[in-house]
Image: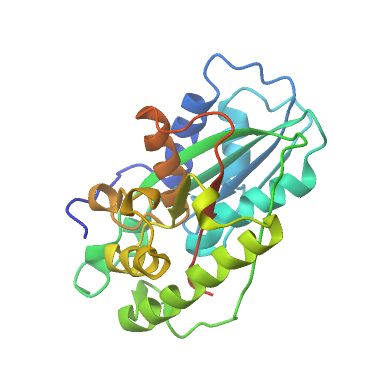
Length: 253
């Protein structure tokens, strides 16, 4: 389902900084207390991309928690849960997915390189009393996706894993919320493969429009894919206050 991919000459940190500036434009950042960058392609081993974002926003004198996390393509969902657990009511957090996957791709490996693109997106979130349900799981599996010098992926194994784990994750969250999928406005999956997402919405026998897809434009951008989709949905006016949305990440590890 991938038609185009975007390759960046800039690092994941610079991409994260640009996304963060757009997300915080005309915002009062005095209550911003947390920056988390989900990435598997950080610019440095240290300092973290999150610290570089803090500095670029001119907040280096502000007492904040800043760090990166690496949960591969599940990184954004993991980061949201971490942010929710760390923020106090009324505080703001910046949760960013940012990847320069082209820096770890072997372009001679045609089974892998054609799938991945670079990208970044940022969300400014606020802790309040709205309902938040989550389900996180890991199988500790290094067989289907691995990176030594280059990222490599066993596509068929990932496909089998994804079509099992996406419905499982959705069902867990719906059970917690005591809701049905019909009551959900949108499901935003990690944008990896059109066949995977089609398999899931056909399983639920629900309209294709409920499962937003933009992977045809960006390919697999790992931790950036879900926030990129949310940003695009917001730009299109699809997101309205009070909507119920399920975000589903799945990735290597």
